[in-house]
Length: 187
Image (cartoon, rainbow, N blue to C red; front, side, top):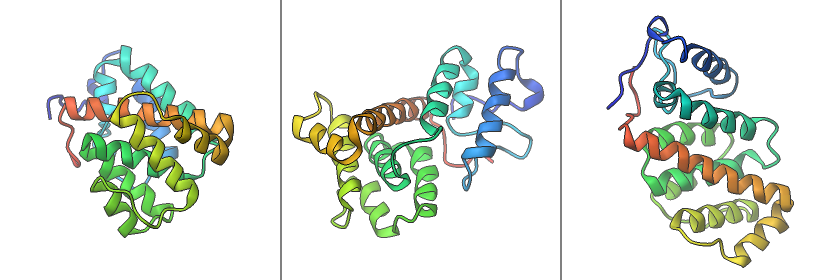
């Protein structure tokens, strides 16, 4: 790991409000995986965001916006997040969201196939749309028109836009995780 974890008593004045808000958000919405060390230091993507609060603050605001009353079903969201994490081979993102996806009812076989970079044969129609949209976007270029139409048909215009922003967010999560070589467990 390229950035040391910051214990709460070591936070700079400009880091403290962001860290406090993140800790509250983690305790409310990000459960089931290790994200806070025993001494209170934030782990995973939260640590790089605290180190560079100027950039981490806006990313955290987008995380909260997308986590607050999402219109997309939880399994659809997790499929898109895992396709993105698998594309970037982002260890912490995959670790955390496999746990979240299991808790939301996705099978181990389905998850293992996605993490391996392949499309499971047993996706529901909505999950398939999320997989296809995420796979197309992380591969680069303009989203194919038929993929966009399928997303709008499945989720409506707002839901399709939400899916796009979710995929973009998890690209933004994956890149700093990989840049700073954030491990799966820092505890």
